[in-house]
Length: 127
Image 1 (cartoon, rainbow, N blue to C red):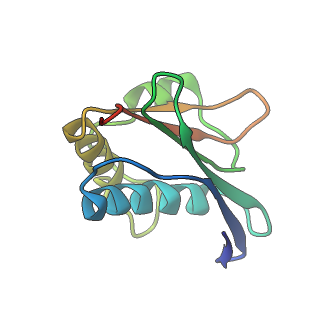
Image 2: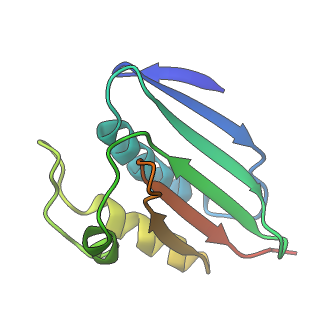
Image 3: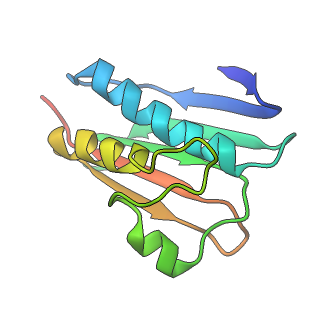
């Protein structure tokens, strides 16, 4: 799937499987994708990739093409922090993290040296 939002190309690939509270997870993904869109310059892209993890669960990666974040900022993500976005509440990441944890999963952030930020969601296997 490809779409354009605010001059940002969003592409999604993979297969979402499992028994999840889809409404809550869609909201969590929406918050994280919205953050990635806001962090990416116009004309760039956000990539969402969903795949089966090595242990049989799900691994979802949301990657933006923004400037990235220093380690001390990455370390503070997950709690309620003041948003740098003009209309952001600062609750989006905390709510997404809570939803993912309620499903037995984890949310972590990475900022590779070449720039951009990746939100990595790991959800356990549901037989």
